[in-house]
Length: 342
Image (cartoon, rainbow, N blue to C red; front, side, top):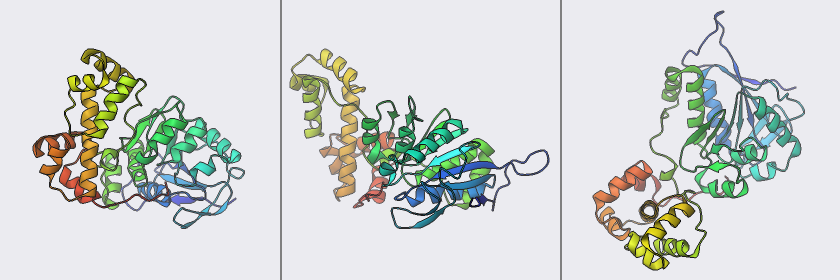
């Protein structure tokens, strides 16, 4: 059996036992061909810096595994060579290969056994698909990469998917958003185990935020409401998306829906989970996000076109919904495109 790699500390001193030795927590990472390399390397480095963890890598079979980028990684273990007992923290990586990995019965069985017995079962990015397939997310609230949230919700209705947070804790199950968010998750796990001072020391050394500003809303439009179930609500929703900057007060929407304002208010909220006013605001914010990322129009022009009226109203609403200012959003995401290896 291949020897596991110890994650020895280079910075803050973690908690020690009465005998003075560092209490090591066993972390097992699950990877597969086509995994996202940062889903492994990022959290691994955080645990390494914290100094109280022993890290092991498991794949469908021991040996060389290639990330979606082509990066080769040696997995010391496979389901047949590593006991599922005694795992403190299970970390399942994501990546484009996760969907095929769900068909590996031996790997899925090992994840189910290890995740059920571990103190914590966690996923990074689309690793949530493997945890869900293993039955570990039933009845849980989780997150994943914003661009894959809708698929996860559709394929696993037993799971409550929230595409906005950077990471989510639901009892002993933790999940994170895409790629680099795995480091945010690992820092939170370290803080949970060893305290804020140790986590802060790790974050400083790795030049990370201990608490990243904003949420996934700054990176893309995620799954945030259900689909309308009736024709009147469907008509109202269609009119909102067709022209976010138009008048969409309850009377205008009710006229398009062909029902009374009070009836529309009740049905809209019941079917979509949010009231009409909140829905309109979020659609307008999405329209502003696209305009900021794809064009060079001034914020004032975008505010008028998207229905906010003034640049100040857009700034206030954008900051409340997305967590950053419109100008900061443009600086981060103008003319960027997402790859396809999630």
